[in-house]
Structure formats: C-alpha cells, structure tokens
Amino acid sequence: MKMMNNMQRYYDLNHSVIEAVTALIPSIFRFVAAFLFIILLSKISSAYAAPKSYVLHIELSPAVCHVDPLQKRTRQCLEGYSLTVLGLFPEGVDASRCETSSAVNLSPIQKRVLMRLIPDEASQARLWRSVGGCVSMNASQYFRKVVAFAEQLKIPSEVTSPTTIRVSRSKVENQFYQLNSGLSSSSLKMDCRGEGGVSNLLTDVKVCYRSNGKYQACHIQQRSTCPSQVLIKGSY
Image (tube, rainbow, N blue to C red):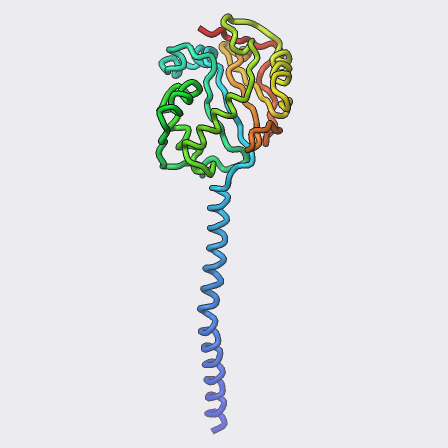
C-alpha cells in the first residue's frame, strides 16, 4: 500500500510538471517569435535606412578609355566625354544587400540631365540595381541626388585639360580644396592607373559627402594611389 501511495505521488508530481511545462510552451514560442522578429526587423531597418554618408566616384574618361580596352566602345569614349560619374555609393553599408529589382523610371528632362553625367542608360540601370536597396529613396530621387552632388563639385581646369599634361598631384589636390569650400584631404581621393608598370595616369576621383551634401571625411581612409607627379590624359 505504501508503495502504491509513493507511485501515485510520483505520478501526480510528474503530471504537475508536465502540465506546468505545457502551459509555458505558448509563452516560450511567443518569446522566441518576438526575439526573431526583432532581429529580422533590425536587419531590414539597417538595410533600408537612409545612409549617413556617400562617395561620389568620378572617372576621367580620356584616361579610362586609354587604359581599359573594355571601355573603348562605350559612349563616353566614342563621343569624347571628359568626365563620367561612375556612381554615388552609400558608405558604411554591406554592398551585398544593396541590390534592388525596382525599375528606373525617369522623366524625359531628368534623363537628358543625367545623360551628361552617366551617358548610357544601361549603366544607369546597373548602378541603380546595385545601390537601390540601400538608399531609402526611389530611382528618380537617387539620380537627382547624384546630379546635385556632381554639379556642386567644382573641377580644376587641369583635370579636363584638352591636351595631355604632367602636373604635381599636390597642385591638383590643392586646387580641389580652393575651389570647393569644406573639401579637405580626408574627403578627397585620387587614383591612378597606367601601362608598363607605371601607374601615374589619373583615372579616378572620389569625394565623400554627408547625406545633406556637405563634404566629410571618408569612412575608410585610403591614401591616393597616384605618385607625386601625375599624367592627365587630354580630352579628345
């Protein structure tokens, strides 16, 4: 009889534990679901939040067309552009999460303005697909920002020289600073490429901005890849 009572108490205890655990399961699931939802929401927010800074990437078309065979048949090379905007890229975000499938719908006027900077609709579409998921705006708003930032930047005359010249890198940099109030060495990066192991041909200029269009130090500080003397390919 005593054994029977002990077994009954053991059964009652286990049954109570099972009932208690069973009662907690919905709460546990709700807690886990809420936790996962918060993580998902934070990732979505970080991917689509408006960037705090941007990098405007400009190519010197005569130089790029000279060193890159793949570019020679592009409109910027065939029609003799002096400068081309490669893109306005959000800084400090995971670029792999920036792709979008949304279309580029621009008004005829906006298309004409944009073609002066990015002279190829396919390039415009590729640029938007690569950054659209991270800029918290539609394509029309994004390209308006591209135009605004690019037109704000004043370019030294040497950079768009009609003839090929050799000039000191520091002279070109100082002219950028003098022409653009607020621009500093931490906001500007010049890159060079070349042939035969000599990389002194100025091909790229990158400028860092706050989201409001003010210049700021680049998120990742990188030294210019150009030597003290640079070659600027004349426009043609």
